[in-house]
Amino acid sequence: MADLTLNAIGKKCPMPILLTKKELKKMTPGQTLELIVDDKGALKDVPALIHKTGDTILETKDNGERITFMIQKA
Amino acid sequence: MAEDISFIVSDRSFEKFGMMLILGTTGDAMDVKMNFFFTFWGLHLLRRKFKPKAAGMPFPMKGMGGKIFSKRLKKFGMEDPWGLIKEAVENGNMKLYPCQMTMDLMKIKREEMWDFVEDPIGAAGFLELSANSKIVSL
View (tube, each protein chain N blue to C red):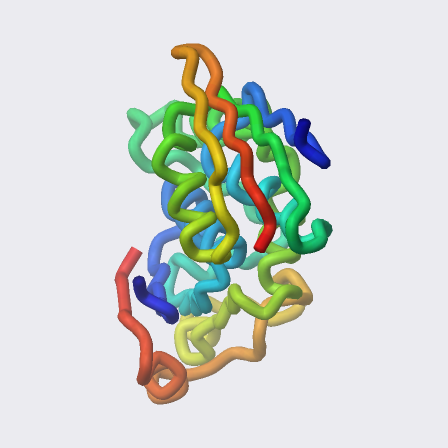
């Protein structure tokens, strides 16, 4: 179970990125965030953001309709 | 990855506004410093009352196009574009610079613009603040 969940279903670039960054800012190191999106662009964009913030993507699941990222705050 | 990018915006279309909005706010999320230098027609984008038109639409549809695109962006989660830009400016990553000379040329006043727009600068000022950044013309 993640500490926090961010449901960004229906939102498109750049909103999933802006909202994820906002959540990450509020989190403390070690906490996890489950991000759920259906914008296909997020498959590349979320890893690009997390690479830049220095946090970690623990898991990515793509069931064809929605993508779920498990992100851990560094 | 580039740490600092300067954009020149010389057009007042909805399309250029959208590019500024999306790149600027995403740059803020990724801690990239982004300067936007508005000159000639691009200055209109900084006016509080200005509603950009979609340049790519056929002639009688341009104004309508801007409204339709705004509505669709809302559905995509972008409810308050200027609110997002303001946040990026307040975080210190996005800066909006009007060009002083073309403001005079176009008769556009500082008071018509959003209050979080930086003080106007000239060509030398823009080149100096872009000394360590890539310059891209939008």
